Image 1 (cartoon, rainbow, N blue to C red):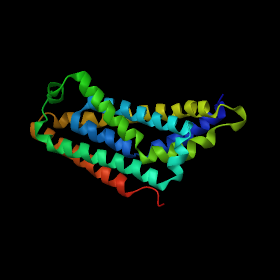
Image 2 (cartoon, rainbow, N blue to C red):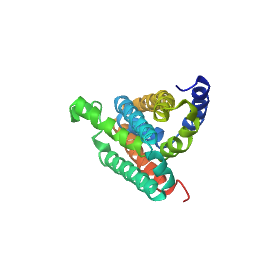
Image 3 (cartoon, rainbow, N blue to C red):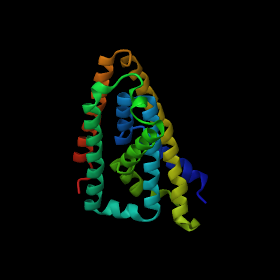
Image 4 (cartoon, rainbow, N blue to C red):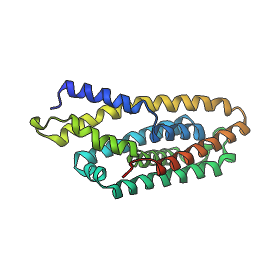
Length: 214
């Protein structure tokens, strides 16, 4: 069982890392600006699910492989960056189609929500910041003498996931609220849709060119 002291210490460390906006936060903001609150919240859910998949990977020993191998890390990072750029291009291309209710009318809600969650999951699971944090920091807070290391990591991993769920939701709601002002004009909405697309493209490029020096 993980001690309370270790959980609190890891929570403090997680908060310090999470409050600095990274790829997942910027992705949520971009989606909120481009498509609104519902899409932002679905993206947040996908992000946290993807992040917890990283926790599971570390708990199963895959995280150390990514951390040690520059090739594996680079492949994961570039995959995430390419997908961000793709989503940004799509948002920019369809910026003129954005109208009040356009997202709801474009496709059934369930399918749209699931697709959005999948988008967020992919970004979350390929987030270089998350990969490094969970692979390098999470294992430092387990207690080897207590045994059950994978279980300890899975429990500890819930801490940053919960923190991220709250903070990312706040980011998404704030960005979607600002989008409401633009929604009063189709021209403004088109502009913000294009801005959200550019933000995701820029984020993808940033993720691709930054990271580990090795």
